[in-house]
Length: 392
Image (cartoon, rainbow, N blue to C red):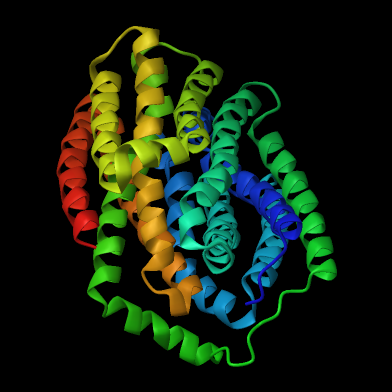
């Protein structure tokens, strides 16, 4: 693929950052709504959490489709269509009349959103040399973190003021704007798909070949575990803040924004963190922060403890995750689109499993113990990844 000039590369990254912002906001917007949705549809909070797990399940599964499509037809072309679909499905989601319809439409939103962030990461892997890739991915990640923060806050704000439907109307408009900007960019700088690009069926067969590679399997395995432990727990952090700390839905969503502040702190200092700690040091420090954050959140009672716990967990997670993300962009350079979307698939299959398990605890009043168990799991995960990153 021909190298872009710095100015054109920057322009691509800015628009991809906007699409990533919108996608991550859509992903996390329902977390602070669970209590409100359970009241409106007269179900338990655990049952309402299906709006989170449905998104994650479909998002993870569709990665198996988007990776080969991106490799065959061009990553940015596929992203542009996925963003447009996000706008359409977000608008329809706002018209849901039952929890069942809402869950189904969240599944469709997950299907469309699956084609945004992972293919953007794969595009960075194609265009940016390895020595600049950690820093570039961190910058792109800062936009997705801002999207997560905005989704968490706006989801709670909209549920208390505009109504949860209003949140999806705003998301639809945001996606529509991003789709127009990306389409105009593609018109000016049409991506060139290599003439020797594999056929679509051959691209799908590549998935099986990648899964036969030991390095790919260990990256996918630890990533799925990370998703189950961290993202699964994260979906219920606003609920825990509401129930144990006595915060309103809006306040709980606002405190959860500190999770994103931790991620932003990492992304803005990624180069220094890497120089100070190295990749293995990032894993060790990140795991320690997540463990401390989960334990403090689980057993704390003062609001400042919840705020500190969210910040520590966010900082620690992105230290670990960005290191794994870089590994994913390098584990199969010849089929990077498929490899990175497999990475995203494993993360969100893990998340969906984690959400289902955590949902069993929330209805039984066991969230404190569930967060503690997740902390113990991160101890084991961190030790495993620390060894494996050094080996590879």
